[in-house]
Amino acid sequence: MCTCISKKIGNKNYFCRTMDIDTDFGQKAVLTPRNYPYTLKNGRSIDKHLAILGMAAIESGYPLYADAMNEKGLAVAALNFPVSAYYEKSTKEIPKAALAPYELIPLVLGLASDVTSAKKLISEIKLYDIDFNKEIGTSPLHFQISDSKGGCIVLEPSREGIKIYDNKVGILTNEPPFPSQIAHLENFLGLSSGSKGGKMKNAFKLSESGLGNGAIGLPGDATSLSRFVRAAYLSANAEFDDVEENRICGLFHMLEGVSIIKGAVKSKNGNHYTHYISVMDTSEGIYRYRHYDGLAPVSVSFLQAEPESDTLIEIGV
Image 1 (tube, helix red, strand yellow):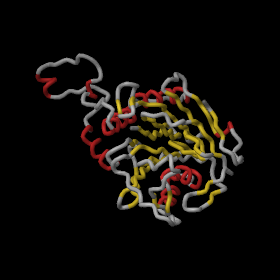
Image 2 (tube, helix red, strand yellow; image 1 turned 90 degrees about the vertical axis):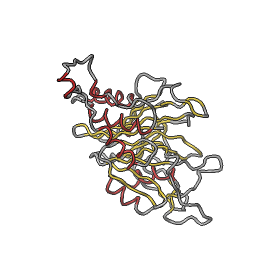
Image 3 (cartoon, rainbow, N blue to C red; image 1 turned 60 degrees about the horizontal axis):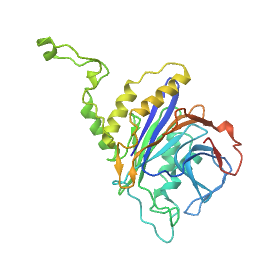
């Protein structure tokens, strides 16, 4: 359970997400410099690529990114897609076009600079059911991808192959597939930040008991479809000024509107809640995040590390 929001404000695009899980995965802010060597499961080696910054777990010297951006302003977030995700079945000889799901974020961010080049790159690959190792299996995922100009797409692995959708709303949650999320949103076209009124109000001279009744019917539960509607409503109505610090505060407040507090949702593993919120300034290359137990966001950037290094760099806390 996660929510991703791509939000254009002025001449900047911000890429944000909540990480809603029931088990901490050892996440850290990790910078992958340009010369860190990747070897894909299909045997392809990538020794030169764009620098990448985001939240990852480092396993066997490899960054397993949940969300990240590159130095050109392209950003990707992986969200749980447990029912609908479909990967090609693995074989002894892995085809050259095969890509393990965990390899998609570093490949796209390493080699693409915007949504257009990301689409071209994605058209050349197929996602296969290939585990990271014997202990870490394949996760069912779909992805939101956005660039610094505000272009935004959704990538979903299906039985018919990888599907790519242009995302004008800039929102993605979990299940069901993206087209169904958009179709569900159409049921809430009447929501507004103002007041509701009509013939009954005028005929019976009814008065408002308080502000906010224009949003009566806005779903407040933690399900994926409800969070999609709520995120879309908040994104459409949020107002921001020209002060950067105020914008960042506003974006974190917006993500709080779709966050899950500890104890509100239970899974078989225990509490399922928002472990962290991330807000990426894709224009300036600044990655900000706040843990559940933290009040102030942590800010890290590409400028804090040597981009030409060949070693993974952990920054932040």
